[in-house]
Length: 368
Image 1 (cartoon, rainbow, N blue to C red):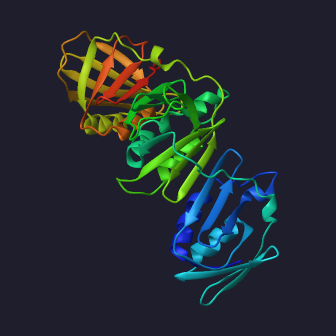
Image 2 (image 1 turned 30 degrees about the vertical axis):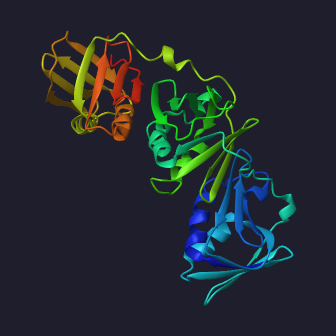
Image 3 (image 1 turned 60 degrees about the vertical axis):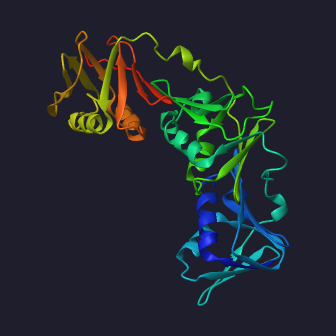
């Protein structure tokens, strides 16, 4: 195999591919990428056996087809540190030589036949959706997934398809984010009314894809896998097994206290009121009174803080505690200048709404 790469294009591809390469694994070949040169195109693959990427690279000159499996970290480091516009890669019998204008590297590879098969996108799509709209939806829910949980369903994002709307839901048991995204092309029968759980790792990869406002991604379900294609990239992922919580039962529908607040002002207030929180006193208190909202915290070992803002409120006074970081997380992803905060009792969750397509449920905490 002999190829001349555009270094910048190769670096961009490796940046995405290496994000799923495991740093520790009993199978050393999984720490590698597979490079396959056909007559007209180059494909680079990576997988951790749960998520896979097939990446077609442009800006290449193929002098001799072939394939090689190389350690991802070594190849990525060489490409990243090189100053050359063009890099030459030549491989034979498990040995690869990479040459620049003033450099010559020799890397020992693995048997290409031993590399796991990474699915490609074949046949028509089951559903199509705008990349930019899906990425906006991912940003508004991915942060609420559980980072580590024995309930595996919480480690992913629920995709619920109804008509031409895709609902994305994520929860870690203490908060829940729900957002709706328009589907570009009505799903076929296989995807219609489907409910699947996509791993957070695959969602993060989708969020990293670079593209334009016009880019459309194609989605296909195959057995217990989702396969997603966008331009030069195909992402495949096993779906999360298990039952996602019945999230609709968690969303309050009977609240009578509603505040319309400035997103920027509340973000500032929450950040400032949480400056003196500690390991023992992690919460902030919201005190709602007639035309006044106070954010406060009190920690015996550090001190206390109060931030006040004027509001338009005529209901009964209320005091409720929240985890400030969970509050900050949602305020960062709200796209509207204002949002609605709905409350009921101190032991019931807060409900945040932004526009018609986004809501967030935040469990209260007991501040003693």
